[in-house]
Image (cartoon, rainbow, N blue to C red; front, top):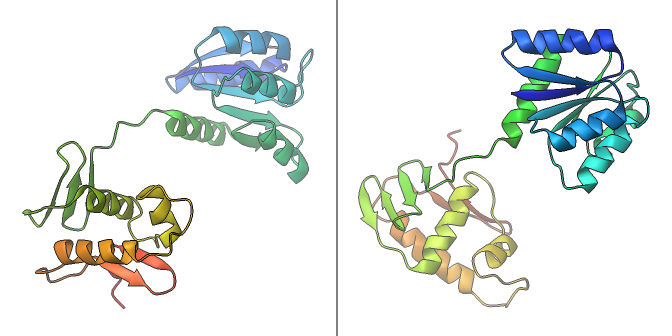
Amino acid sequence: MHILIIEDDRKAALYLQKGLSESGHQADIAEDGALGLEMAGAGSYDVLVVDRMLPQLDGLELIGALRGAGDMTPVLVVSALSGVDERVRGLRAGGDDYLAKPYAFSELLARIEALARRAAPRAAETSLRVADLELDMLSRSVQRAGRPITLQPREFKLLEVLMRHEGQVVTRTMLLEQVWDYHFDPQTNVIDVHISRLRAKIDKGFDEPLLHTRRGAGYVLGRLEQP
């Protein structure tokens, strides 16, 4: 990773740079907020480590300027101000994490790595699987235990939404918005009809049902937990 340390305490900044270098990362240093803002805007960094109290430009002002310019590089705020109110201010200013001084380098490194993982682009998801039920979004095909299942386009979308929320209650409102693009209740039984058809296709003939109704709440796709 390429990391920018914006820290006016040179001894602390060099310590961090050395530790990050030994951990296999490249780290640059800016010793005031103005220089830090300039370097952050000009460079391509994976994570910024920003001290809360900086000369020329306060750390929170620096973060606000970055976010205002559309720069969403993950920011770890480090500060001797450890109160809850200060941590909240740091996060609301656009910081992604907040670490109070003094801190252990191992914790700072773990937090940097976590921020980088969250920001990393994920490969496009092309298939979903729940138990032995598989949905392939490229071929628009569904199978269970290797047996092909033919679905209509609306049934396919309904199953996709349910599979993306495996084990969670999906409400009727969620289904109306995500499957039918309705932002109101049309007061019809359209959901019940499609759920009934989908259940017949993915559960009928199999020992274990996967599509469950939670009366008054919605629907759940997944294996029932054994008592």
